[in-house]
Length: 381
Image (cartoon, rainbow, N blue to C red):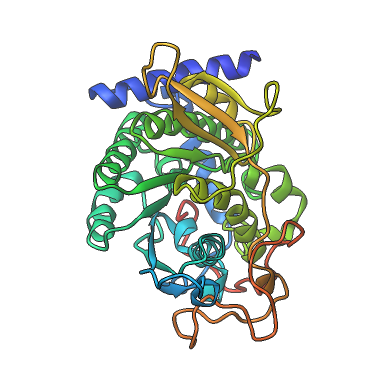
């Protein structure tokens, strides 16, 4: 394992251990770097645009047209979204372009069953806010929850061990309620264009270390993670259209890219993803590793999923399966840029008449207009 990953694994394990046992004073940054980050972040705030308004509300039932009409009617699966403004979908104009709506429609097409989306995320959310969001989400008795959190913990200098503990407690509470959990870990903030060196280098290191520590806590609490780090990295850096007008939040195409990476893990958590044919040897890109090692490796590769497995000693949570699932297209009609309804439509989440639903491996990102307005400041992720 490369030296950087070894170091990240050690730091992530220390943060996760401090989180589990209530340790204090352990942050991701050294004291000397905090002052530098604070100074440089003020310049980044001035350079980042501002998005006005709130994310579009996308709560409602999706995918009724995907239901298996030959089978007995089933109640909708309940998908809860928790986290920050990335989870809420800030940066797009239409409800159907938010990550919650995209995943609800994609999940409905795979499950052949309607999906009810309940999104309790809000702009500026930090891990400390998850307890309040958890209470709202549990009231809806979700079958699966997706959490996107961490960027604001970095930009607002939350103690890493505290943020990780709060996330782990949220995952544990959801799992105790019988809800599956998928966490999109902290994105790589070093890819944000207005962020310049040396802040960019610090932001990259801090966000990846936090993502690795989040993975350890989530897996040990019974959830699974998907790395959003470099997903919002090289691909986004090379394609400005992936960002909204503030050059900080994803655009409609950016959210579609992230949703395509998370959808297989959401479906797999519910037992809906097709099982691959058994291989004679190791599957490329998959490995059973100590959880800290898997977490560090996932932080370096976009779309990597980490989930618990039983090790040789049967100790669940100590070992994890690291895998890189193939991204899939979202329901085909979305790729055509045509409206598919939503909570305000007659058939939310259904494909337009005369167009097929389902998934297509060749489907590209969902086109759509990004907001040309501005947002309330950096770190309001």
